[in-house]
Structure formats: C-alpha cells, structure tokens
Image (cartoon, helix red, strand yellow):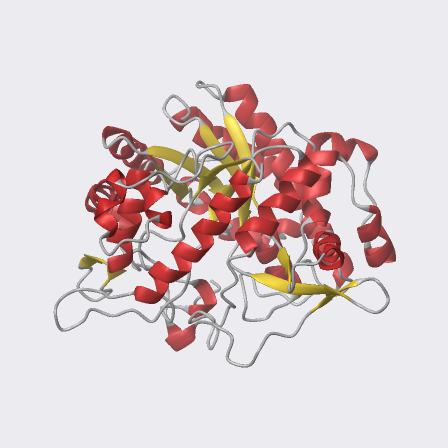
Length: 447
C-alpha cells in the first residue's frame, strides 16, 4: 500500500521483485557460503505467513522459510531470525495497526506460528527491528518516509510505541514457552551512537550522557526503548521530556515488556560528534566541510561502533550484537566485469577496527552482521542505494560479488587478523602475526 502511493518511492520503485530472493535463495545461500558467512540474519514477513494478520496460515509463505532454513544449515550458516522488519499485514492496518491495543496479541499469535514451524532448527531470535523507524518515522514523521506514512501528534505516536514494546514482550514470552531448541533471544533497535569530537574526559562523559538523552519532538533515542525492555520502566528523562504526551498504562504492562534477553541487538551506521557545552551539557560538534560521507550522506564515523556498544553494554549489562552496519554506495559493474567498491572496503575496515578496540577494552560484543548481503529495495529510497556485498542487476537478476565481498571473506577467514595486517597482500594475513591479545576475539559471529 505504501509503495503504491504516488511520489512516495524514489523513481516510483516497488519491492514486488527486488532481488527476487524468494525464488533465488539457493543461489544466494551458495554465495553466502562462498564468502564464508558464519551466520545470516533474515527477517520473516508477517503478511506472507498470515495474510490477514491472524487466523489462516499461508502454507507457501511459511514453506519458503522452512526451505531457506534447511539450505542455510546445509551450508553451515546459522540462521538468526527477526520476526518483524516493518511489514504489517494490510488487514491489521485497517484495524489501526500499531495504534490498536490488541496488536501485542496479534503479534504473539504470529510469533507462535513461526516458532512452531522453525524452532526445531532455529535457536537465535530477534523480535522487532528498529521501532524508532517504523513508529517514529511511520507514525510521527510522515508522510513519505516509512509505512504507513502517518504524521500524527506525539501522544498517538507514543501510544503506538507502547504497543510495540508490549508486542516485543509478548513475543519473547511466546518464543520462550514454545521453542523446541533452547532459544537465544534479543531484539534489534537503532543504536543511537555518539562519540567525543576530541578525546578529553569532559567530552567522553558528555558522549555517554548524550546517548541517554531523549528529545521532545522525536523518538530517535536509545533509552525510551531500551529501559522498559531491560530495566522495566521508562527513563525519568523521557517521562520529563515527553510529559503529558506519555500514554497512561498499567504497571503490569512493564511486567510484560521486561522479559529476560540474552543479547541486545543494535543497528549502527554513524555517530554524532559530541562535546561538552558551556552549560556542561552535551552538544553536537561541527565537523569540517567535506567530511567523508556515504551515498546516503550519512557521515562515516567508525567511532560509532566503539561508543554505541560501550554505552549499551554498560547501561544494560548484557552482551551486545551489532545487528546492522554497512554503507550505501553507488556501485556498478565495471568494464572488466567486476564491482570495485574500494570505499566500502575502507568503511568496513575502519568500523571493524572500532569493534576490535571495543572488545579489547572489555565490551562484550558477541557478533557483527554486515548490512547487507545483497543490494535491495530500500523503502522510500527505492533502488537509489546499494548496500550489498553482492551487486544485483535488477533487470537480469545477475549477482556479482563486489571487491568488498572478497575482502570480507578474508576478514572472516582470519577472524579479524587481516584488519591489522600491513602488508601488500591481505590474503597472506592467515599466516601473518595475530593481533594483540584481547579479552575476547574479534567476534564470535561474523554474518
């Protein structure tokens, strides 16, 4: 519905075919294996499973995921399943979608269907992806940003947010009560990251405070979402800032929302530079003109993967998994038949070194997932951006491994040693000196 609205999607694109993974999953999993991925984070499409949102199951839809899981496991790739990545069944939209207080139970029913089908082979689960986006940009900041494209007032948006948190909690309860294999459960919100523009004690402290901030006119923060899920209450700062816009809720709601999690997922692409202001509060610092940025014009700030996980780890005391990180490029197939995306290699090199440093400094990071394996449809941005390690020709569906895919293969093979190798031939990294010992290796999962 959202993509059919005139003027919403760049160049009027839609996701009906996109990279056609539905039909080409065996080829795609073979390419994942060629790169050496240890894990693949996939998202289940709710309306593909339950077209009406509840009730009758669409057998061809759930059978696709059944086959995909088997194919991944046959190649030695562990599936990490996300249950909600923004696709809301149309019939539930007509009933109010995330504004309807019944949606936590609808989501629990959907969760049960998926868990009953897949949990004999899947043990890694995530409930919802980026509520800051599908609520904050779908219900508050629209139109034309994310489905359903509403531009509501803050009270309604915060009500939808509360329902999303309840849905997360009900989903965790359902996973833990029905899973056949022992479940390892987390979620995947946006990780709002900051970093000190200069490395001083004052700026470091301001950075950590800045990542706990809540802003009155948006939902782009860590703690309004994370504190209820992990600590069982809304943050005092958020209650103060949102004030009378906070919906009335029962104390027992927090008992539902706060469920034991095994890891805290976070999607992190960039960070805001922070300095301590004259009043002692954190403020955004100005970066030089022409500062490096991706095709999406997101700033290239590898410090994001040090400070973001550090904040979440220290505040919530559970392992962190970087569930998305990557860059949009304007990649194309060169005359020699290859895709030379040197900027993506440099981007990943910088960001993974930050992951390595965070681990060396004691931050518990249990995994890193690159976004994404394939170029794909990017919602309102259509086909403007290419995030993949693999180039997709959308007309012919031909897949071409980019230079970054071969580079990333070596990172996985050496578990990060190639990141620190200074020689001319990265393929020699497996025999090069290993990086200095840290409390843990680079990551237990690279996907």
